[in-house]
Image 1 (cartoon, one colour):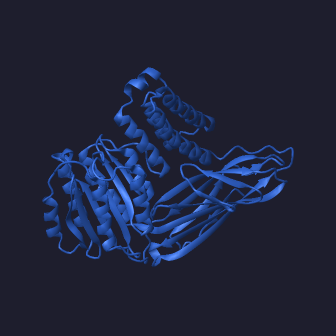
Image 2: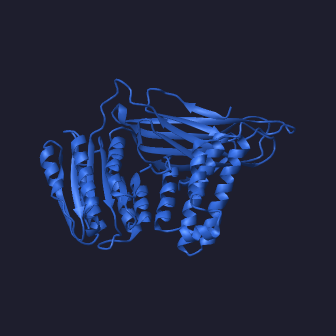
Image 3: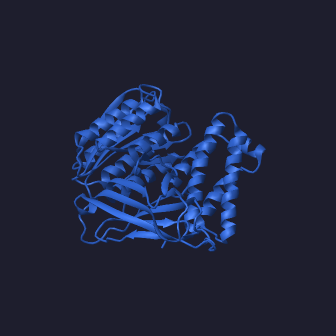
Length: 437
């Protein structure tokens, strides 16, 4: 048997382990892959009401936001005011070279007053991102409670050039706030913000990162973020992975787990209704005797938002068969290989950007071309026209990665942001293609 399931339907999350092989040859060490699939279902009748929200909105009002960008930011902020309820808390902080609180953390009872405050926002000077972020955290902490969703939402279109500008220091603050129960999502608008910083902040704060190419996309991003916050089903998600029968879990593609003598562990962002996370785990296995073997055990723990934040723990053990000396291993599972190859592609996109930043366009281009070839070969080998694979193939083809001259001539700031965004989206099991305008 090549998968294990946790099927307690009283819980909001289910866990499954799918191995790349169901049979291995006897007496031969090697590697295989496991996909850990975490999923949640739709909201069920009779479950508890959603968790209250405590949202600290932090908006860039520097000079570059003047005109249409600020108009759409006001529209998006008023949308949040309109959609949240009287049991929710909202605050709004704005920054340029100075930081101001448009309205402090408060219950959303007088919506007209809050929307009038939003309309009063005007643009100013430089970009004191750190000052705005820290003040937004202060507002969120005023009403921060464990029995609600506490989130700061940061939007900027420029480089941090006033106050603290060191990415590691800012990410360290996001991590510290997460430990106090406040997560962070970031939104980058246009072509002049620092996507590396915003991704690092979102990763450290266990929120989401959004890349908004045009200002008229801003309201849609706020709607998407709010939809997720309104449908949180699990918080404080932890995953432990342990190898069995002498097997050893060595990596989770796209993640940096903590290792100890018994295996590895990592924390994950909140999950929403109808959500899914797919983690590709690399496993070293020893030479095994013929028979059935337990290969991997996972332990999933989380606070169940649909059941009064009850602490839930689920364990799943994956088993597989080892054949006799003459048996041939079965062909690998296509779905597992697809998830592995897509995860590898996301990692290579980030590595390609790093190479190009060093001025090594050819290494960056070649790495992407090798990924394109690998995805095409996987699709052809299994005769599968898979939408996820095709999406990545199309993304790579559109960048002319097979033509050295065209690639170096066409790669620009927008291409860099696209690659980093695609990598982030893939690692978080979201579509990588941008919506049509």
